[in-house]
Length: 287
Image (cartoon, rainbow, N blue to C red; front, side, top):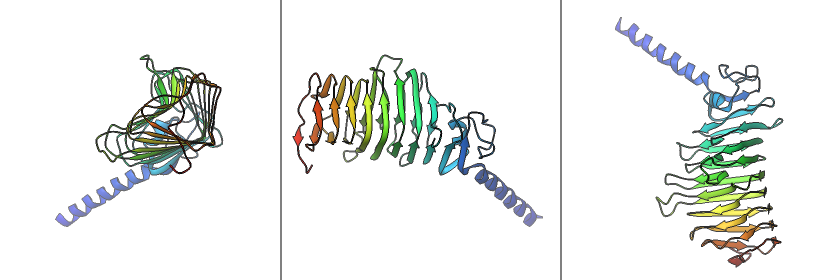
């Protein structure tokens, strides 16, 4: 009898574990006509990213089947969200569209997404834990914090110790003027921690401050275009570096701000037609 009881317990554990494993798929799907009670499969998709993420395994991928508004989402594990073929939309009034939080060291890829704060969204993508985040072929607009402070298209604001990487490619960030572009800050809990950001082929226009470097950051801006904004480059923290290569900074109120951080130009940038602009701290091909 005792042996039978043990076998029954082991069988129940196995069944529960199997059901839990099966509940999370490596690839899930959302659709404008889906339902979050579905398993998020190709033939029975979910309605929202929030509904799909709980059914997607660590390291898995959420795909978009057809146009729709898929809602704000909080990400706490390594995952890819890809709207390829239809451009997945997130309408996010009064909230952050995407929160990356809770779990340090995760890798998150966001591709082919359109984020619209509808004039009141607080941040487009907010990252509060040291992590590797890759943003590719996205559009972000309409972010305006209801508190009166500028919202951000992309905000890196680590609240715990650790280093991380942010990559933003082939992305457009636009208006309104009380929305900032990309703001990066590392926690000061450990002196050796830093955030390294790579901004490649990113167009930013009609916004507040396009690129903001805060505590313990290195931001590399290449092949990009910043125009018609209040401030293009703001090197705020003394321990921050912004490197510029093959980038156009034109028709802004301020081209390069006079903050305490270092701005390094590789001598192949166009910094013209701004109302005012400080010179780069260094013009060099080696730093």
